[in-house]
Image (cartoon, rainbow over all chains, first blue to last red; front, side):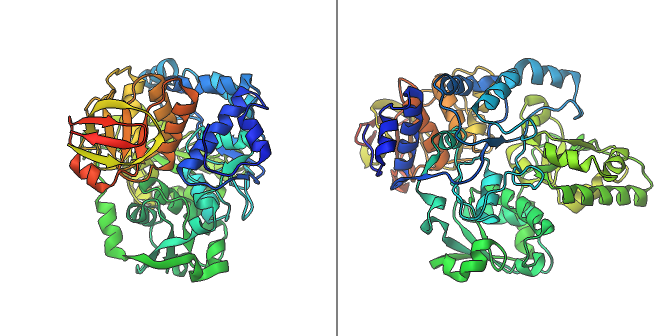
Length: 428
Length: 146
């Protein structure tokens, strides 16, 4: 094959089949992919673990599973262990007879086979199904400067921005290929130049902005560019503590799904912004000013996809991306207090909170688990997005505080405060 | 007739009628129904894409700025190729994005009959081309629209 990037003799040998046909094809894919972006070379993946986006055994994706079989047969396995996005189904989550048939007989019929493939390829363990692999309880936390081969847009933007790791916005399969070869093409967010900010975002709100709306506004404006956000530290501080990380998790997921942001810098807060300050900003960067009115405008622009726009919600999802342990505790306290204030014992809308299996396990060891269960809220490890990815769920009026879930499904967005108000009041 | 010169990401030749998306092409939303429910014409399922929603994509010269949406996009494109629900070629006015590039390259390396993909064709190309126009592409990235 013809290629433009500089390869080492070892890489050329792999390309020529020294490690078998499957590995040669994996390398060829990465080289062609890198060439498309002007990559100059391949660089080693230096993180301990990878993260894959594809967690679902969807019948329709059978070509992907056939490809996985070719990798396994060719002994082209991941050189590093990896976590993977959440599963689409959990028997604890309220469903219907018809929906169960659709899920189990038509859609996710490949789930068991695919889970087995993932274990052979290098999945850490059965608790590693989450989009928030970087939680302490999960333990896939890259160090600053490490090069990753990850996919899952919300995890990539978090790893790049909050942890200072280096990863491009990879597609599914490509991220696995990088983990198999142990190298990724050197371009984009892996390079110093690609991490410079081409936008300055000035936050001039009169109160702490809702993370999911602020992220949405920035994502829609800058698309795949890198923003340098000023003025947010006034509201969320200059320390990367648990609350701030949770805020940035939700903010980042909205920038990545409402736009295509893979990296943001927050002045005086995120690692590279603290170290390099405004030298991260390119000359002639564009400027986007966000005030209260702009956030209101953005929120009002979200289309309501429900057939009956005044329908009573039938389901509520909180936790896309998955909630942190601290967020679960805060939501539990808030729901309990809200119900008490309104004289109710249980939430009025069937509500599901989602978190990583390891986070759920830790949470279940605390007294909060009993409190939450008594409110009627179901705690699950599923991916709400995958749960809604079927014709039956699309017809259901679902509410969420996730701008990512809103973007990819027919669910309706409300702020966290609005969601709390809706689920703890008598349903209309 | 007008010619445009782009960069072949996956080189190839074909002739097909244009299908034009002026906004970002959401790969997952567009192909989901077609792949899920056996629609051999692969009618576009993305309700947010007014240009091509409901229109068959199979065998067309799909003209677009970039793809958007889920990072499953590359895999979905690869599946569409293997299941023969893919456009005849994809023509990007802008630099190809990482998700579409993944799908294009996976198709090129892991299937026997790759789908040609050309990018960097310019805004002028996307403004000029209209649904149904005859498109002919050459291996060097030349696109003839008539």
